[in-house]
Length: 94
Image (spheres, rainbow, N blue to C red):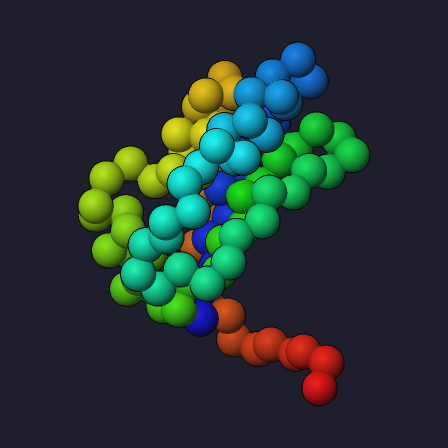
């Protein structure tokens, strides 16, 4: 598994734009997509955390056009950064 973090500080008066873009996103997902969450810290930092089947799935999505998460942040006037992480361990309740 592989996880991407797209994050940026979003001005308080633009948070609605980010949430609206998130809610308006289509429910069609690229190959290898598992799940995604929009999260906010108390300090005004926002992240879109997306779990993928593999790094290859992320690279294929990125090769197909501008990633939706970047577009969403840009619609809110933010300049996002992207980090990509390999999942090396995972625990879930049984």
